[in-house]
Length: 182
Image (cartoon, rainbow, N blue to C red; front, side, top):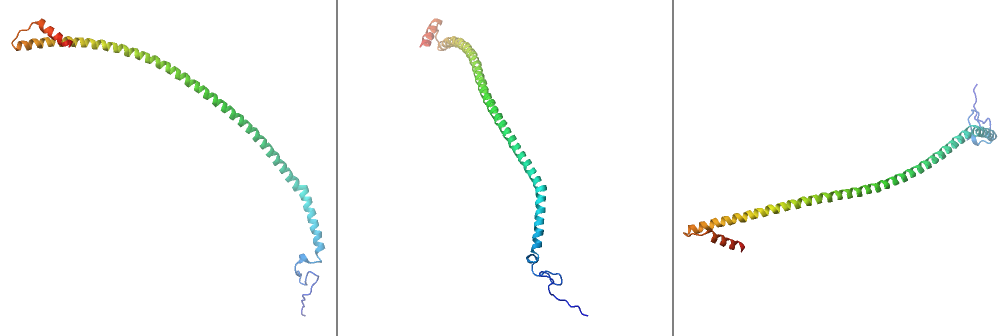
């Protein structure tokens, strides 16, 4: 006997082979069943979310908010401390500059005083050396004049003698003295 297969629908949405006819989601016979399961799933999701997930998320958000608030407060406190430290640094820096300028002025004054004293000593030494040098030059000049006079007398005697004359010492001395005066 031959089995006869019919493709006649068993229900409005399923054929004899158990296959859906068209889109089963859009089958009007199944819509009430789908709505029931949809509501049941939504209620289960709501209870799971409201009792488990949302409190955990809320706790994490509250903890985060608290941490952020604490971090902002700590940052403001550190910022205030940094501003105070900067003011103290600037004050210390200006005080150090004033002190350095005072030290520089004191050092310049001290150096100028020492320099003036050293210059006065050097001027005294130079004046003493100059006086000694002038005295030595005067002695040398006097000695040189005396030597020139002696040489001139000797030379004049020799010249007169070589020309065959006889010159006396007084005449030669008077002639040399007259010539020396100009």
